[in-house]
Length: 207
Image (tube, rainbow, N blue to C red; front, side):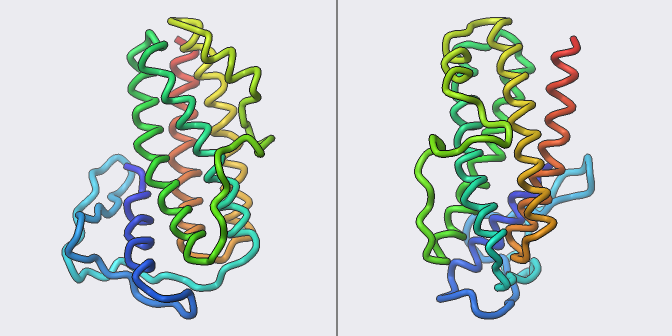
């Protein structure tokens, strides 16, 4: 299970504060359930209201901001790619994988946009400004939109592997240079989760 739910818990509680001035405890509330990560291969557990989940760190660096701003656009392209799958893919494994990617990355975008908003940073619109880090080009996206069946499956997997590898590199930079606890937690989730997905995609490509 991806640990993004724990990161969302950080966001939901920290957003109730008027600023990012000092580390403070993160406590589960009485609203939507907060799912805590389990050990690898194990199910998570639901936090009880009032349960302390950790601390929210206020030490924000330029690397943290670059990571959030860049990863929002990076994730948006991944969602655009997965949005093509239902009507074009033929392999049920590809469809299932796309569903898992979307389910993980949509809430991660919410975490990062909320975090940027609290810092007074304007959230980048779309992803057209982004290049590198495995981002698919306009030509590649148009080719993907035009593909169907097995040809779509193969191209989707190849593009998404490169996309995930780029995300892992971006997250690695955050783990090296970032300081904010929320962003570094999210970066660890991205590295672990997307490396697993890369392995699954390579296995599908290998037949």
